Length: 438
Image (cartoon, rainbow, N blue to C red):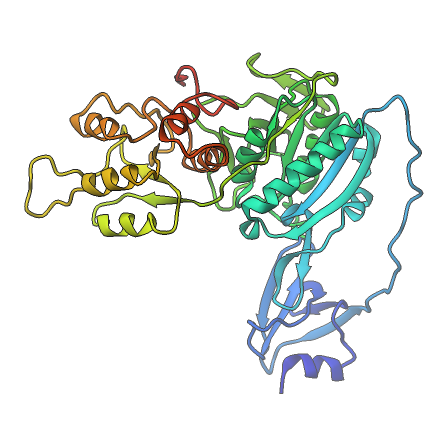
């Protein structure tokens, strides 16, 4: 007999507060992944624990679940002395609750519910909110980026002072990079924000991240696409990263997002509700500036990760499916070309030349993540650049190189023009100089 059926006979239902031996918590629904003799309890710290039921297990009902209608506060009146911020929800953990069928996190918070949960944002600005998608970010496609950019344009046309995009963290740096190319000459900040941990977790970062994002959108002076996420493991600061220079660098840490080959643009003091700028190299807010919306992208671009044992034939096959290829290259910009004619080594040079001759651009980005490509140093790099590989002296990330090539291919198929556009710094994706950190 299932343990939940036994609990039902004892008058204990999901949502009741119970004590099992020395553990107290709320009885959670059973999931399809839990064995029939395991009870799942949510403890007061927000974490779930599974307890195996035995004959001597003591279960005590502490309190029955109280059915309460959600509290609704009166909507805030428009305050002409406050800036107006538009929050567009694209899904992700920041707008999620527990989905009890599987026990996993599932998008279900509406923007209005999130505002209700975090009234601080209403103290900072007049809030407009609507939902664009209910998506995990791994389900986000380039076509979604176009829709986001178009909706941002609409909000800017309506006169808002800043925009916050609630987004899942897994592919947020792809979206921030793509939007940086699509939304040029922004008059106001566009801030992407997410959460590494859902709202039911005691360690959730959604409050600090969202409040900091709204604060920056309302009062920040940087009119670019940026990402606002935890600066460190504490709950005091959020970093503001340029959209083309940011990358998710950890699976679960709250400070997973880091600026790559650059410093963050600014930081938000959550406790003091203040903004500190870390550079002057940014486009300043100017509401009189006219946004240039450009959603012409070609999503038919793929990534090839070169590694020992990778096959030139696989790269050739990619050319049948993609109109542009980004290669995650080793070191300063290398893939195997076997100049010494070793019997075991394989050369990618014939395939690279073949693809370029067919009009398929090949773009390099560094596997190392940090650092700048320099294909002038070794003969391998010089040979590859000579046959037309693009990327020499660039310090973009793999993901930014991908979305930029999509953007460029949306405008031209001429290889010379593709090279020119790729090597032109459009949205801060190529640093003028490499920063050295002690």
